Length: 351
Image (cartoon, rainbow, N blue to C red; front, side, top):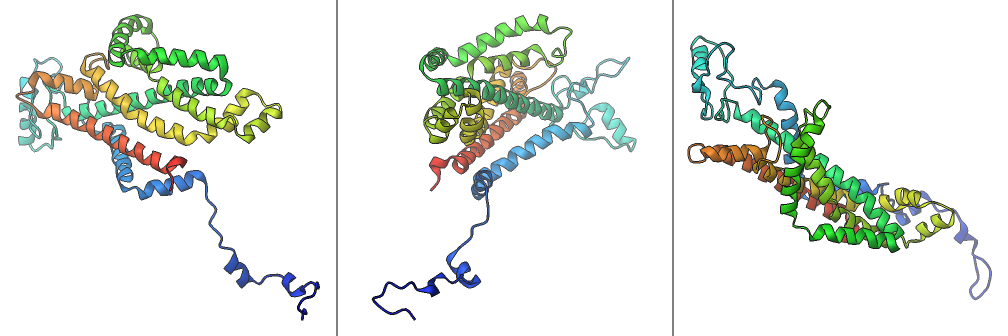
């Protein structure tokens, strides 16, 4: 035993700890990552989770339903080879049939119903809504990718190098910000629609259509400024960190520092901004299609379907309601999901 008031070392204090003592003192936490923690916080947000599943159902429906649906988006049901147009297929109400289909049903044949009826040209309206949803989602997704690439590249360069480079880029961004968005989008879409059509003839982009290409060009020219400002602000705050200084002192070039250190550390902001950009792109495509500057006929989009429904609004109001509800559901769900991503992955919002 150690005597009191002595300088002797207590040997018992250096005995190895038992398993019970280790388990009592050390409370181990399961290994996790930033992405896994963010997903756990996201799943606790019920509104964002429900919104994600709504978007997932809409996307899967738009992708897979046309593979087994018996009608095509551009086939006129009343048009038969060598026969005159059958007007009984035009403007059918939901779950109604044309004269030929009634005869087939009377003969014992099973005919697939028109869930949303047909339009003024005898085309199944449900499959046109599905194809319109597919087009709107595809345009929103690819436009957001274009905005992400351009905005992230320009914003990271301006934020990292600073000085004259940052000054020139930010003045250019201010000029684009000063332009009226709605007017510039309509003017650019109108001009590009005419100039791109002859250039696309005979190329692989001819099937896509000049209107869709012009939409992507408009997004690439105008909508990257918000993303670039956001990335620039993140880079300006991160470039003064010690690990960036150590990399530059070790001889790392600016491109390596940006791609290996700066961009990975602001990836949460990039994901959140991209998720919130998709509904904005879908809404822009919808109102351009509503004005006749969207997809080329007969390819439908939700905006063009709503525009076509104006002609028979008093007689067939459901044709306007259906694409409007789909647009609202997609935009609302994506916005709520984007807010959930922000709350889950933004470190500044953690409690």
